[in-house]
Amino acid sequence: MDLQIGDFYRDAAAALLSLYQAFPRKVALYVDDLIGPEEPDEFGLPSKRHQSCLAAMIWLAEEGYLRYESTLQFLAIDQAVLTEKGFLRLSSAAADAIVDPTLPPSIRRARSSVANRLREALASGDGEALAIAADALFRAGASRS
Image (cartoon, rainbow, N blue to C red):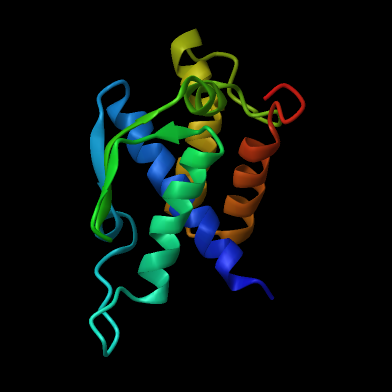
């Protein structure tokens, strides 16, 4: 089983949701804020888990979901913000969203968003729900991006 993919989905979702909450401000995204503190290895280097989280954020930037100005050593990416692509993907309605039609339109829109789907999957700790939500995010508009 590819356990690192589950970690990637958690890291990517946490990073993107942090930026979505701060949008349109630029912020520093610290690895420890996303995954919790990790002890360095016996040589003082960041753990593999820590390195993977930082790599996930850099991959998101390379794929056009966010941009940042620099890294802060191995600790964070600095001055990070969602790109238009990242913002639109997170704001869009999830394809399979089912929301109570009696709710006000603004609440229906928020609850049906991909961002909300990712947030709920992260909060539940359901790895399969998170994988499905992340896959939908990355596949959305794949032919348009």
